[in-house]
Amino acid sequence: MNKQRSLFFNVDWFVISTYLILCVIGWFNIHAAVYDPMNPSIIDLDTNYGKQLIFIISAFMIGFAILLFDNKFFNTFSPIFYGTSILLLILVLIIGRNVGGNQAWIPISSFRLQPSEFAKFATCLLLARYLSSGNLKVQELQTQLIAAFIILLPTGLILLQPDAGSALTFSSLILVLYREGLSGYFLVIEGICILLFVLTVLYNKYLVLFGLFITAGILTHFYRKNRKILTLIGSSLLFSVLFVFSVDFTYIKILKTHQKNRIDVILGKVDDPRGVGYNLNQSKIAIGSGGLWGKGYLQGTQTKYNFVPEQSTDFIFCTVGEEWGFTGCFVVICLYLFLLIRIINIAERQRSSFSRIYGYGVASILFFHIFINIGMTIGLIPVIGIPLPFLSYGGSSLWSFTILLFILLKFDSNRMGII
Image (tube, rainbow, N blue to C red; front, side, top):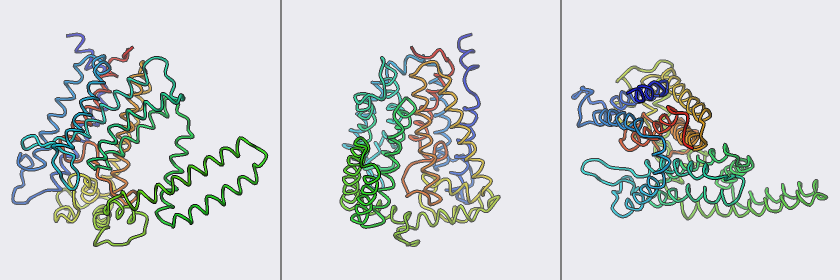
């Protein structure tokens, strides 16, 4: 009894309170997004908001159950969690239901299970177990390759669905490697790749290549007596040239039409508010129309008349913006910032490397979802179909985010951690 009392006394109730507030905000906004004046009850189990209430209650029960487990359970069984998630990702490719062009759901009666959501916490656990084992150093190539394999295996299977949004989420785990000692040059390289991608899409690839050769020529002139830097310039030029050609090939041959259209809209290549840019245009109208204080609960016209597609899932932030205005958006973003900062603080105060690494995995995945989802609704990022944590409608996403978060809270409740 004393042990259980100590467990719940030590748990971070600030994080749990923030989690519950976000879930309730999500529930009310899902109600607003699909509100039917003929059926005003907020507790109707046949509606999305009624189902979301069940998801919230069951998610909190899952979180409560996680707190009862021993810390070592998650370390010991992390390979099993990971292996199970991989098997589910393979199974969904065989028997999964195709929704919106993605074969990402396994039908279980009236419920649809999305394995890619649960692969996130499983990957974080196995990555933490591997990086915390022995005397591994992230600076070593072998460690980097094995860590990359752990991350890229579920990523590749999710891309086969194809669900590019969920697959991109796993790229955020590079921040975990960076915290554990990965050279900052990798982040610089990632930034350069993003720049080259944008330039290649916006302009002719040969124009980009011409600029690369001119830049390399100028640098070579200034550092012609430094053999080490010249070697770096040459290898960087070769990598950049190959990357530009790969971007051109991927953009033309691999990306689907709707994916290219979304990128074109964001980069300003296409201005079609009634066609490919409809979702983004309606999203910005909804958020902008809310003004400072919003139109009021259940008063959003963009929301009420279904002008924004997927408004209870991927575009739930539009409902917040229209009905609660800039103030509501500011409050939600502040709650997310508080949650992320608190998670990082929790990760840093862990006594075991396993718990710390896992904590940064949680922070990375949540940050990616929050930044990308809100960014796409206001036009900063191409529209990518990923949910807003704890706000978007969906059982799989809410349960997976809950598991992800509460495992960390369990580690923190007993800071002796895992040896």
